[in-house]
Length: 418
Image 1: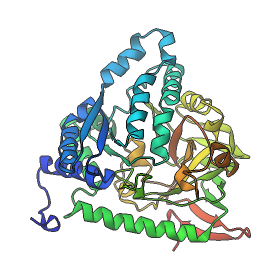
Image 2 (image 1 turned 120 degrees about the horizontal axis):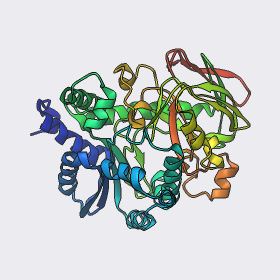
Image 3 (image 1 turned 180 degrees about the vertical axis):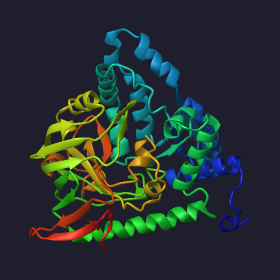
């Protein structure tokens, strides 16, 4: 049957299968003969199996899956000795890096309990994250530098669903979350692959417009926000599908609604207020307000989660500087859903946002071949973290500042100005 003429799936199993197909064909663009490394929460085994089947149908030579267990993770924080929180499985991450250098693709399935570590010591959580980030960095650089094709998809675990829909019975909450995931991932379109091609074309057109302007900075202004974000020298706007160094085109995020680029780590000034809570490592950080001077955060406040925010900012010197700025219209499908997903993959596609920490090499002209010193000179930030948080809304305007210092409307009341 012609794919374009397939009926819209009416059962959960059919929709889950389509998500697996989109993850492989659109998310990864998996090539015949390529290996695939999957990481996933234990609950996500049904989706892992669908993805594995579609990967082999696409010609994968080997699919290897690493499963994470929330219960085992929690046991560490409840029972391990204090010294254990400066340890990470470097041997495992070295193996992952070796797989990527050997040409393997990477697929992560999100769906962990957003509140798993909410009751744990923030200092221990921060230490564990720092150790993991340091050990994982060689593998992560191959991902963020697009040395390989990679993507992230999601599974509606019961714990995640209960967090998003706390007033519903668990079965109903899971069903509602699946509906939201399928809708955001364009699974219910008559032809999801064609729907993604159309969406990617729209994002490419938007990045082309922004790249043509060659703005020196962006100015965000709205309630509690008056922020000027300088852009890195030779920055590039990206969004949607990207072509990795191995020549394979992939969609790193399923779903995605953003266009993004690299700020200049030393040219950010002003005050900004979050417009949505940030769910980070089991803590909901709410009503964040920070002040930047010379690119660095010099004051940070949060109504809830203040201690966790402080620990994040103390990760390293780059944690107080920006590695990404992204624009998302307020009318995006994820924003229109009215849901707070407690998952950055979704919440970052509901509002314009900034990210603390590591910059993306691909957002700079020649960035994938530049040295670390050259990237730093051009303003690209370096850090062990990369944490997105939302600053856009229907009350926030964005201007592009050109080389002559003139303001050009980019967004008005959260929507594209042109």
